[in-house]
Amino acid sequence: MNRYWKSAQSAYLSNNRSWLPCTPKFYDDMLNVVPPVAFEFHPTLGQHFGCGECWDHTPDGQPIFLMFRSQPKCACRMATLPEFRAERRAALPPDYLALSPETVTEACNRFCPGERDTWQSGSMRQYVERKALESITPHLVLIHDTWFSKPK
Image 1 (cartoon, rainbow, N blue to C red):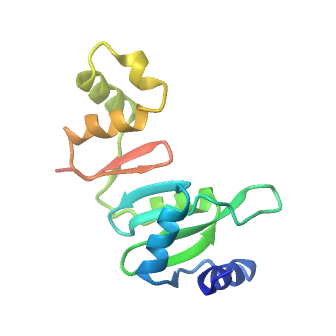
Image 2: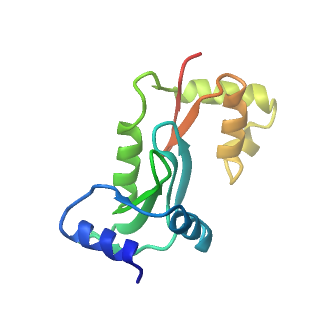
């Protein structure tokens, strides 16, 4: 186990949820070792992802992952996916607003007319949603199942 994992593990076990500095090389290595469990760009946190291999589980069975961010400097910490999503939502700049499901559906229907059943189910959903919404706004952040946008 390397020193970053050990530091993050020790912090998590002592209930410390702060970000711990890591090198860009460790950040890059962990991004490439296994597919990430979550990976998105965030306007404040930069590239923000969770290493796809779970480290442990909480007492109620939720997997704990080593999470990473690239801004303001590379850093890592242990977290569950709900903790990861809550932090992403809390760190959004105040001018980012949630897009309604109706707005997303309307954009996708314009982007893929007549193919609603194709894009609404299956692995292409987030891709189609992102491409459709990029025609409305260039500033997009996906947190769990909700798209956020910075008004033009």
